[in-house]
Length: 442
Image (cartoon, rainbow, N blue to C red; front, side, top):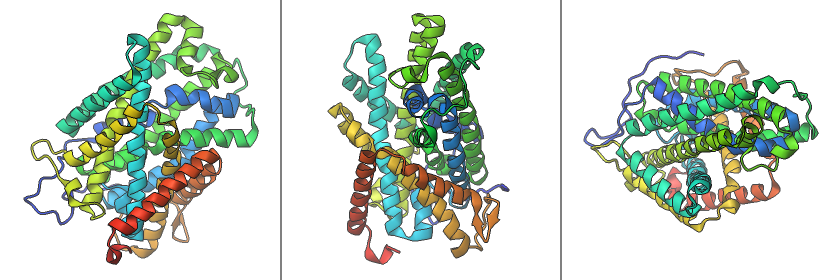
């Protein structure tokens, strides 16, 4: 694999007088953003549910998910180096499969963000509600509005705050690892209590965490030297987060039996309470506020950029491509995503709709890996600053592993969630016939 420099303009063919996004993010900012959104809030909750499926080998479920996701991460690295655009997966799909598939891909991407933001905001509200007694719904609405305001101010401010929150998140997880390390070995970490089905079921559940690849790619038009920075940030993110995930999982099942973790709403706090008492456990719950808040912030930052990129590609009305010239932010797209998120947050109950998230992630990963493979044959002459290797008969093996992995894990999803996801996909397909001109469908 190789990486070269590139200083191409943010969007090819963009009129010079049109306001565009500002390139202010360096390698550190892009990597920290990736680590923050991949770590996010999931590890503070998902580890318990995953333990219920995989038992003591829950750490292996995270590793399996990471290995399968790594192929997709490499695919994102290649495509983002070829097409450094905010549209990310939708822009890549248009190059390989045409506008209709690109629209549906973007639709699933936007679905993930529109649902994830209010879901995590309500989680933030639940955590803060235990300290303040305020309504989780009210808190969720306030945190969405505050995060949207920060995102509107600029990517520099967003990444700066995200970096601070990410450090707090990582410190909290490292604290859990350190205090629980003496208990490592108290249980057999190689026992998969529910067999291969349990291991793959756990991997399918936590695979969602690695959707952060897409979010990093949407920053392509605001990153300095994107053809070099984005691929490196992707690789750094998956390595760092996988190591942290595996260590945390190994510790938690060594301290608290996996059966208890499976029914816990705050598994990491339970671990710390078992070791150090309730006072320190409340501290971990407080850290969870930064984790959930950071996820909301970054989802509201990256989701609108995917919409902005789709508008620039002609997949959505041009109004969504408008940029606040003074701040360099896609303000119309930000307001649109925030508005949808507020509707779901006000409902106070999004558990049914949120099930589509995993399906949307699997769909995105299948398309991205398929795009890399198709472009190897349809556009072999195009320069690839970052090239996925090895390849067999022209097919990049990591991308093939990523595609097959996403398909296999999707078979271990909850059946209800699968039906909801297929429904969202079908709706996107119907909308593509309405919004995508027939002459652009290819």
